[in-house]
Amino acid sequence: MATTDAAAPLLIKRYASRRLYNTETSDYVTLEDIARFVHEGREVKIVDLKTGDDLTRQYLLQIIAEHESRGESVLPVDVLTDLVRSYTSQAQTVVPQFLAASFEMLREGQSKIMENMAAMSSSSPMSKMPGFEQLQRQQQSFLKAMMGGWRGGASGPAPDAEDDAEEAGTDDKRDMDEIRRQLAALQDRISKL
Image 1 (cartoon, rainbow, N blue to C red):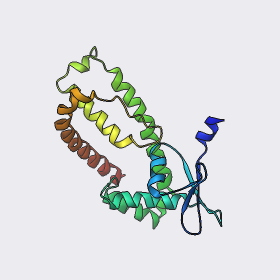
Image 2 (cartoon, one colour):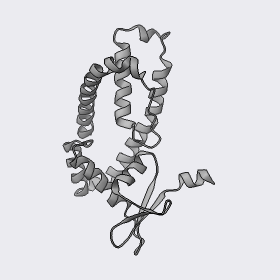
Image 3 (tube, helix red, strand yellow):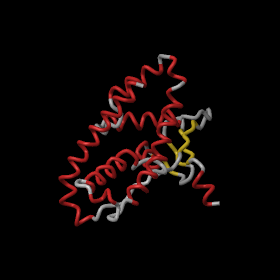
Image 4 (cartoon, rainbow, N blue to C red):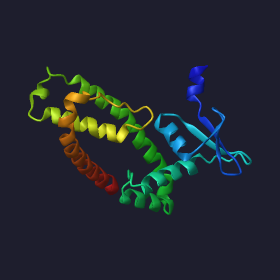
């Protein structure tokens, strides 16, 4: 029975006062609470108590808008622009399926990539290449940044906290710069499609 409950979406009811009520814990929740549930991998369903209308999409979009307005930008302006265009064009029918399939491929690919990276041990001929360890750390950082909060996303191997702390500090900036460069290139390719 516990597995059924875990697989069932968490039902949140919106009252006329616009307060959100968690039916599982019998208390009121905020948008931050809902964002945390989603981040932890829990499916949520938000319904209007009076009408029964499904408001999940509206509230998830509101959570994204709040994160973006606080400077936690994930969606580049050109991607947002393309999304707005898709609402006013015939692409409206194709875009949702494309986005869903793309994210699903990323989720599936992440676990395979992490498995392959873990399989590359010191006995691998590639591990003897100069810069291999740095490349491996960059890939892990990139995947963690892209997939860390997704349901079903593997977080990958954790670095040794004390031993790698100093090295990670300087490498993290370079890693993030490289990740940004790779994302920009990816976005450019996607926009050309």
